[in-house]
Length: 254
Image (cartoon, rainbow, N blue to C red):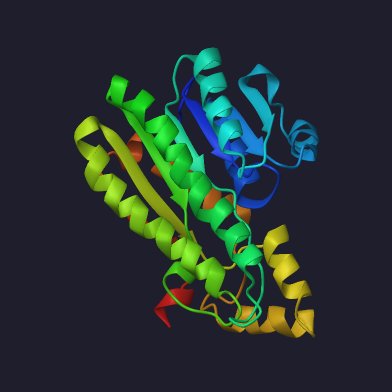
């Protein structure tokens, strides 16, 4: 099924790599006007190399921990486009650390990007969507919001909170014509997962163990998750509200 979203305006975080970059590329291919956010300015070069983005893509280099920067970002997109049809909070960070090793700084850094920034962007974008009585928001959670894994308590806490506030906002925003849902990817072949493997004493063994935990026997690909995300941002998902869609190769069923 080809999804067409001609001239709809998407604001998406985390376009520098992985799922965010794959979603930005697919959104452009579907006809959307994309405003991509990332701390890594090299993301623009990658997208320019791999995608004929043309004038429908605008890159914003921004640290998501910068509240004033988030306000300026939303104001800039509204000023340029007149509206934001869809918001995709994709950016995320993960740090491997035991409970005792999880410092206040590490916990704050995790929550700032994974939870507070998406919450704040929802706050900033929702009033504009309310005025038009339409809009779609997608928050990226994780299968680790559902199941646990040693060394990732801070990450799981942040992603579990994303599911909680997504459900609450779904009930709050539905009367205003705004849909909000969450997507929970499992292990996906991204730079973030590669970095997690690299922290292990034996990265190859860690990868093998990860594969063994997935009934489909392989890691997911960013494009596979992005396809589901794009569906959730389209009219095809018109009756979804407060849903948590798991895309994990079956990991959470065993």
